[in-house]
Image (cartoon, rainbow, N blue to C red; front, side, top):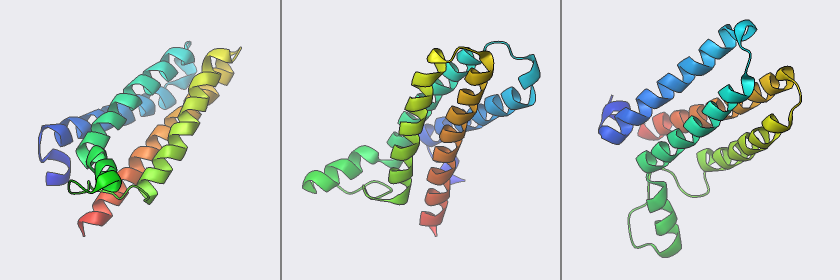
Amino acid sequence: MKLYFGNMVTTVTTLMIVSLVGFVGYSISNRSNINFWGRRSLFVLAYGLVICCFAAARDGLDKTIQYTIDGSCNPGTFSLVSVPNIVGCVEAAIIMIAAIATPIAKSQHMREIWFYVMSGGVMLKIVVMEIARIIQMF
């Protein structure tokens, strides 16, 4: 439980992840009644970015970068060249492509597809990070 509720940053990050999963799940289950997919994509983009910032602070990504550059502090949770960081970078690129493509899309159907791409990218990024954190504990 310390992994998810050990201090204020981990608690807030956990609650934000749960709320984002709930929002995406609600959007998918209620997709026939949604008229504005662009707004939902914008929310996933902005809220996902905030969650990623909290997760980076939680995992000590700033310490990992500083440790890699000059070794003046202890590293964070993951090394700089690790599966969670590489997957995170790839997923961030996919999310940015979807964020750029969503306003360009002419129809709500295409915006819905880009919402799924963006939501899938955010969810995969979160899942990989959480699995790596759990594995690293053992």
